[in-house]
Image (cartoon, protein in one colour):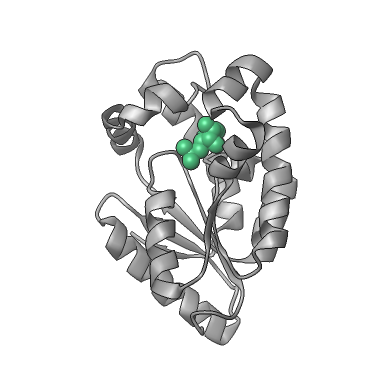
Length: 192
Ligand code: S3P
């Protein structure tokens, strides 16, 4: 892969898997733009995501999210796209994401995600609850529901528990380059 040409990259995964951090690192490494679906939703709506959920409800959020995914992909061909944890639930988003290019799924287990989200002070202010359950039960249930969708879109599965963001970015770059070179979109590869 040239660092400025070729198809784009999409980062998917649950909250707390490091999509934004890794996306920014990859943008630095490749010279490509990093654009984040959640950031664009906030900019467009002029409200935090938590406010959108509370004032308009999750279905309204998902409508904005789908439009943002479509628009960012159209505006940044070849760009690096960071998605929200639930972006992959809508079929139209999964299709758009696969159409954009190489898809990396950043993974972590339930306990690790709960630990990271608990440690993240932004979580309580900006991340709305997705169920009425406690943190660990919510993550377990939602992750279980979403896992088939992550599996469906991913070319590469990267375990983020044993790796820091730089190492995750290196791995993605290596596999993305290889896929660009071979145009091989076969079975997903797993780096655990
Ligand atoms: C959500 C994840 C969030 C954001 C919204 C809903 C989800 O994105 O899109 O709060 O449904 O998992 P991050 O994964 O970037 O936190």
